[in-house]
Image (cartoon, rainbow, N blue to C red; front, top):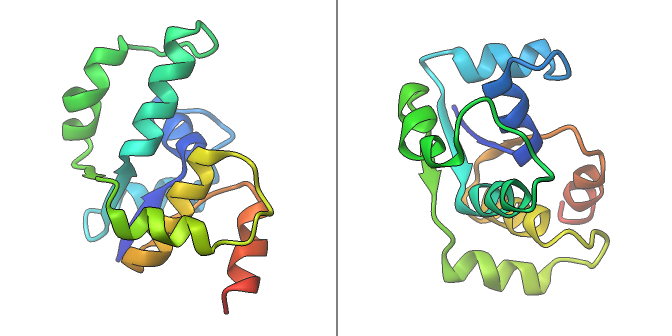
Length: 127
């Protein structure tokens, strides 16, 4: 199965944070699953890291390729079709990073692992 990690899920996983739901940890660690991290998440992390709002256990420069390769994650690039989907989404969430990650998940038909319940509203509206 393919899974796209929301930014907070990715961060909780790489830091071994107890906030990460156990079922997500199991899915991410299962070698049968293909795990994706969005360029948007890496961009979001870079901004927060550079502003001093986010502490990482390793330098940001080690996220790519270090942590991503060590965990066999794939990076999902932002495509024009993802941006087009954003224009079609109802405006129920202001965070541009979350909006593009959700659009990527929807367009690529990749199940998203998230804890922010606002994504449930998108899923309900787009059925």
